Length: 448
Image (tube, rainbow, N blue to C red; front, side, top):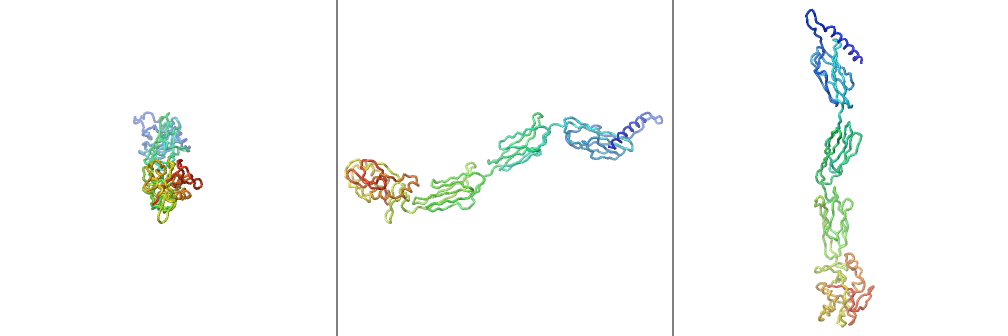
């Protein structure tokens, strides 16, 4: 401050000196030469932003520069005789009005002083951002953007997979997980319509790359006829689909893998099915697991397929196996009251032969006709054969497990009682004689 006061006093002295020497010198008839500090420009206009400026100074002597305003900072405060460059910095003008400042260049020894006038423009509305691009991985995430503004602004986003939250000096950009197999982009616009100013941020997110593999190298599994259950671990970064090629095999997603459940195989043939782990959404074939199950032994309750027709074993020894049909009918034994001679208690095939010898038997004996039509070699079981079927719970277990009608009550056998009645099984497996003309349940039998 002392220098500034001294400067002002010096300026006054210079002006006085200039007045005293402003006349005509009578001796040499010319104006005397007065040393002075010359500027390349007396007034300099600068923008409202903080910046550095310079001007050229020509002086016959050294000089010192002093700023009269705190928003102007002189970078090189002194210079020597000759032509020099004066550098100075201005702070940002935060006000919406022009401001003026002064830099004084002085040489106290020669009583010299020159003023440089600095005119700074008023602050203009401005929105600036520290990032113009944001890049995200497919799993999404958050990134911060610093916003510097001297006016109110609005944030607009062109995509629903991007959101933002305000923070102290800007916004936090939040991006959702990208489940598409292609890259996606969108823009965030930060603007003020009143001043017609804006800035934009381009947001890019990498495409999702589906990955699916088994956590084991084993893709084939064997299971016994009694059934089994196991889990195959799957490593995947998406929600995959699971399906099987057979209705007897069950597969479900469980935890980080696929649970495979194999029920008992009632059939006397082995069977194979596949479990597919895939994705229709991403057109991904994925992985295939093969499951092979062993055949059921030829035992009571097993399902046998003969010539494409299913039957359940109800009798087996070292010479013969007998199976009963999985279906049943509700029919009359005969339509006439006559004695046929079909009286065999143990082998319905013999009773079948008796009936087939009767002229027009197909229309007169509906139960026999249905059993003959069931398949080649099938016949109407005799009373004792029916008893073996009726009293065996294992057969019903198989029927129920495979979705067939279980054996209940009131079945005809092929064994005749007399001209009007035939032997059958009533409730609880008791023998009973049913009227031949009435309709009762019928099953067919095959022996091999």
